[in-house]
Length: 571
Image 1 (cartoon, helix red, strand yellow):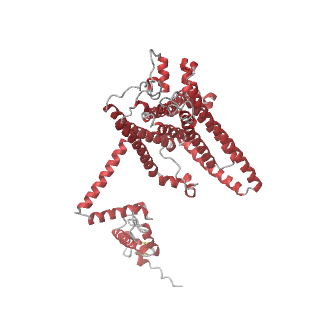
Image 2 (cartoon, one colour; image 1 turned 90 degrees about the horizontal axis):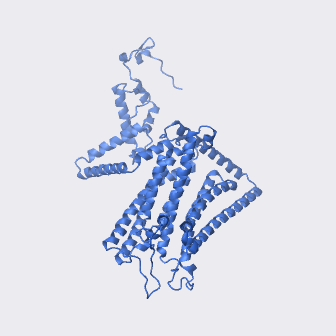
């Protein structure tokens, strides 16, 4: 082993073993000595603009010059990266590196007209982007909702705002491409009069004589009477060549606009969604390190967020236990479990089949009962018969999802898999219900596809019961949208708001029993998607349906915003 040199106090500027004052030191400084150590090589990993190990801030000019020299050497050894954010350096070092690159680019491009125009265009884009952000409606309102109730509730209102934008744009296109050409080419003619040469084509939906107010109100709710021959439905627009082309172009443009905006919104958050769904990265670390919402305000919402994070961790641990039990399950246990799953899925299919058959039966019964004398004489019964498919669809969508939630835990899946199955079954129920309604209507229009049927033999379709079948399709979508709005308003005003008042006025046992309910984000989002799907399906036969949906979304937004105390948004 090498012998260590003896301790020489004088070499270090001390007298009798005691360190001398800093001003009296004549030997090398501490920073220069430490920079000669092998550990100083770690500077290349720390990046430029970082003090070397052991040096004090602003100790002397020598330390600063040594730091700059070492930093420049590290930069020369480090290959030029594509972006500062990709370097394994501290934030201060990356900022200094980014500033150095910017100075180099300015020095190289000084006097270059192309570089100046590039910078000008980039700054203009940033200003335009900031201006568009400032013009977004309800921006501050959404921030306040997110701060009070968390990001989950804010995402619901963000989706509501996006769908509202889609409907506003569709309404503007419809007004410009359908309504304006209709009146610019002349006043639209009235309903077609009876023609002696052809038994088909005559159509007179208007009421004759003095019409009671109750009948007018029921016509407003069902889309019949004065509304049946109005710009609201397809049958109003005259068969003019130019109008037919603009009508089809409007439908195509609206569909393309929907597609492009939805793709843009989906792709913009695709990377974050894929990262969030990666179980290898976010099973525990995301919830432990980055699940807290720093925008929350108020002790109640903070405690709620804490309980939500605790619940998510408990769910993760429970799923881990379920996976461990599944790994040690015997063959007999697996056979018994799969038998239970098969039986429960048969029960779900039976419930869905019964619901779809009920919608099919309600649609046929509506067509058959409308011509009954008793129904025609009683406006209330006629309104109930008209709304029979809508009522049946709403009842099915209200009753079956809770049944699916009761069935899912019995199948032995993990909690996340249970949620997936519940959502799939609920979405299938809502969307397939619309398809069954359209199929049953088409079956009534075409007499079940039997061209030789007496009802369809003369005109090729069921002209006697459905003289303008396009308008009838639009009326069904109109009633679905209106009934969904009325049920939503009834739930908010007759159930949620009184429950809020009862919870606030009765602090005792009754108030705890009527405790404030949580904002169920999945159910509310499915309701929005269902309403928008109704618009997409029926906007061809009811061109003003996007405008009606815009009014509906505005009402829902302001009601839920002003009654936000009704919920305890889960975040």
